[in-house]
Image 1 (cartoon, rainbow, N blue to C red):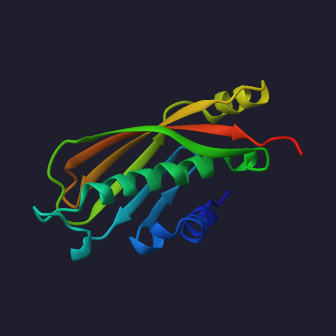
Image 2 (cartoon, rainbow, N blue to C red; image 1 turned 90 degrees about the vertical axis):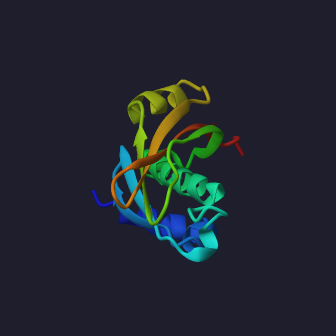
Length: 150
């Protein structure tokens, strides 16, 4: 099943994705990989991408994964970020690639939603520079907020 629509949906519903020039390299229900170029306006005082840009890249990858993993649930629940924790491991310079991975099976999360709870799930993100060096790690905890009955 092709998930090419996820990249299009992200670009249409999250304007920052297009503004920042995020590209989606791989989208599956368990993993998303995105890339970010290195334009000068993204840079900070030490020549690397600003921390907000790095955070945005990881959050975008995690959001695309939430959409890909739980697209069947969108009619009854909205994915929302609960919290994020980021660790800047090494100065990031140049173009970056973020990989987001679902940390538990989507079926477990969906089962909790089916049981009437508001499930949470974590997406682990790693960001590497063009040489493949790990520069950043981020964990994004999401929830599926059930829609209110009409």
